[in-house]
Length: 239
Image (tube, rainbow, N blue to C red; front, side, top):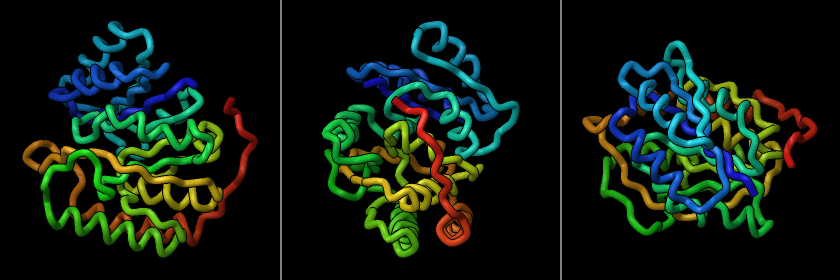
């Protein structure tokens, strides 16, 4: 099995080298597809250094910031692996969790795996009450529309078998990509599993980018992708 790790990057000069080092330390045959989403700090310079240092790192650039969904769309079009995993470029999510994330797929039970921050992972930072409430509320509303029973729809850690990833055309440009994934996975009738993960959340002073306005965008995205979108199955190009 070859793992494709897709990593959006926006102004992550402080954590970028460390998160790539942690991903590289995992034992999987893998490629890293890093998408610089118009960073204004030293991220582009660091990405060039990483691409020169590691033969399995490929870097793509957006001329200006277009949003997480846009970065993931670029990355998904470039993957060559059997399984696709989304990794943020900060240090909130721990690549040591790859084993638990991949197990349901490797065991032949799942097509998609969500890593839940709320299922009791090894550790989680005590953190931002209203952010937690917002996450749980958006997950509840998403579940009502998708008929999934997720505990953490907004999680970064989502893993897809390649044939499922190939059937998802990412259209959201912003953090609305998270409910878009949930809606489109449900319409594909994929086998979805959740596993507990660790979480070292940042606050806004540490660079957290998602804010209250994103909750309203997510609510519209839930309705848009569940009510007004019809899934179009395409022949798989996966292996």
